[in-house]
Image 1: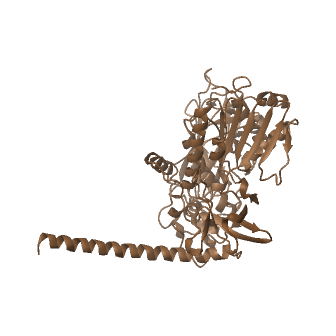
Image 2: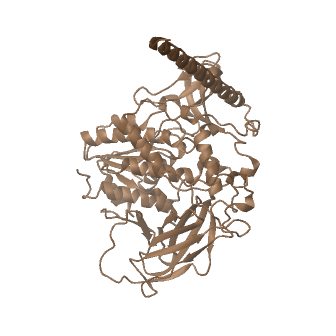
Image 3: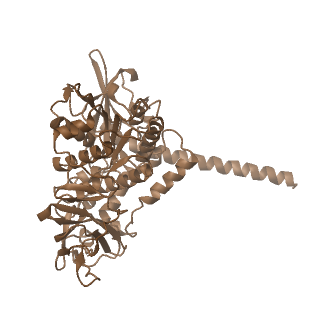
Amino acid sequence: MSLNDWKWIFIVLTLFGLIVLLRNIITEENWKYSVVSAALDEVQYGNQSSNLTRSLPAFYPNHSYCPHQGLPMSLEEQLEERNLLDSIIWPYPPSGSELLNLSQTSDPAHSLFTIVPSQKDQQWHVGDQLEVQIHLHDYEGRPKRYGGDFLLARLQSPHCRAGVVGQVLDHKNGVYSARLPLLWEGSTQVEVMMVHSSEAIAVLWRLREKRPDRVYFTGNFRRGRLSETTVCNMCFLLQDKGPRCNFTDLQTGEPWYCYTPKKLSCEDRISHAKGGYLKGIITSKEALLFQSGVNIKVRINAATTDTIDVLPSRTSEERKEDPVTSGYYYRDLWRPFRDLPMRPFNQASAITQCLTNKLVYLYGDSTMRQWYDYLISVLPELKEFAYKPKSVGPLMAVDSTRNILVHYRCHGPPIRFATLMASELRYIANELDGLTGGPDTVVAISIWSHFSTFPAEVYMRRLRLIRKAVVRLLNRSPATAVIVRTGNPQIQRNDISLYNSDWFSLQLNTVLRSMFEGLDVLLVDAWQMCVAHHEPHNLHPPRPIIKNMVDLMLSYVCRNGTTNTA
């Protein structure tokens, strides 16, 4: 045969191979979608079963269907996303660890920590760094041989109401080091806590990547007396389940879909709501890894002592800014490690003076609404404009005498609030683009908790849009004060961890810090402000912590007298 004949044979074989490959891919994807479809049927028609996934123990949808919706990314954004994903890589247990019995997993009750003796004359002074070694063991007291456990470490001194967070280093062999800065004199206690075992983290990782549908949402459609409710989400609404209403935001490109009602049209949507939580998403064996008081947020005891006495500093030099520690408490006052004098705003008159002639815009979840509630409670001259329900907003309060306006609006979906009118679903990026900005404008943002069930790429995409809007705002009005609040730890009881684990929040915080680094914004480190404080962890931190957060914001807004300048 001639050379041309061989070329034609090669082309035909190549095309045949491609056809076979595409057929296999389509067949596999159709199988996947039909399996998920059966599960979603129960949700769509209100039959939420605790055994929803019992018949499908080994299957999880392809998460790539979710995070890569929205506007296409530039090459620079793709590279950033890759770097961000690399920054949140977590040590994964070795192959086969999923087959372990509970007795072979990390047990805080059998684990212990030891304070490493001081290398400087066996004494500790203010300005030194304390090192603690933590050894993880299983339920039978055997040392763990791999890392990946989620630990927290802090110093506490109740006598002076002081606290600071330490940095935990994973040596990936069952041994961890914690480094804690010594910032005040006197008796100081080390506290170490295991939030989750490495085996539990593996389950949480799988849920985040493969089951973002474990929290579902609904849309209510109404025309006259006719009303229908369908399931909504930003992804995992399968096309073979029927037509979908496309509520993707035209400005940001953020996707949102609802199944089309049977008798009404997409234009008839009137409200959005949290539908509920899917149950039965882990096995009974995996559930043993999430037991409150057993292996979720349990203290690890010291091998000997957990207390040291800190002496005065050896030098008169002030402590330099710590790249890891954002601040610490002393006398219940947060002291940030940055070039920002922290002012305690203990009198309403001081807050009023700072905010006179200011427009304060608060955007985000309910942890930002706490700032609004706090300002309303301490400034009696602020008069609220009634809005029902208050837990949802939007909210607004005005002091017409001093020309102060405080406004709160929740972020756009996904948001797990109670019923929210569809007309009030706004995206933060769009709201920022509508602001003029300037020295009389304060913007505070908190967006994290409602993204804990989605792959990290979904959160990155949302933050990327907000960041672009912040940059545009600061470009046209550089004197605008912009504050960004991180997420914080919260109560972790059994099933709660599957949807709102502190591990999810920690990962989102890492992303948020990186994405806003280098911008002219104030980062309020709610994570460290809550971990360092003596109050129990809560999704909505108690009032003393909220006061410190708001005081930090006000210190930033009025760092040059009573006016923020460029």
